[in-house]
Image (cartoon, rainbow over all chains, first blue to last red; front, side, top):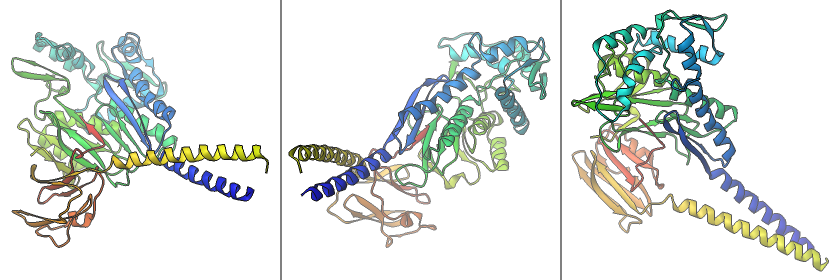
Length: 337
Length: 128
């Protein structure tokens, strides 16, 4: 009798263990909240570790604090105030980030510009406000263009110092902050040996490991730039990050003209050749910078650029035509037609 | 064996069985979510067929400019029958085989045909 009980107990324990194990393994944990001016989230598949997903998400907030330009005593506002007086030492992370941004500035022929702060500051009140306010005048724009030049920034590798050759120069990492944050979350999750996760940095999507439910490809939808719903779906393997820049996210219409948040560093005005640019890269930092740069480059230069870099991309022109960079057609389902 | 021991064993056993049942119920709930009762076939963005699942009819023949597409249905599972006489250079949709879960779809890019379960032409994330 005793033996039978023991057996039953043992078998029950084994069953319970397997069932429990299976259940735990099939759950997902999600954490979402507002940060970086957007709604960012992390989903870890096959896990129930709420602590971990929360911790991973905190990376977003760290980047937000780190790259915020508008808080009174934030690092970037301090740099803007002081770096034109004398070289100031900055944390290693910011120094490396700026270095990398300057490399991308070169690679994109100036279309991505981390020194675009003065132009952003000029347009920001108009783009963020709901009411009609006056456009910046030509003189102001000229002045801001001339201050938005990376050549005015001096970096000293030994002391990790930054110096602005003119007063009024300011750094703006707005174009890469989300992607950079997605990279940081990705690194964090990899360190923690997480195998499947989706990182949503408010529109910049990072894919870690294979997708859930035994599928082979992740499905990343691209928002339709002019209506509710989606333009199409990119079917992607693991390790990719997808970024989209568009003129529909933050804008203000004055006299029938849409003034949006992506600015051309050469003309000083919002870009107008494309209404949406999606880029796939292994790093969010790069896909973010390139999607912004391609908005500036326009269709032909943009496609050419993607082809040279061997990157997948989906571009949409103002007449709502969808253009794919070479090779992208294999992975893109166009749902807009 | 003492009566006390037996009681303890019995209680432990009950707890274990209880947890097991709970867990199994949990799994069933999870699985139920991944079945749909409606299958949609679209061509060039237009719906061309809407099939209630599970279907009595096993084969559906859809005719389009590309030829004849045969959907084979087994309960809630669907595939493009290899006998379909429609032109397609790479036959990806046929090679895909059976699909049975909500999140799955069959996509024929050359003919722009999409077969999916309703409510679930889904995606994992959205980029904007």
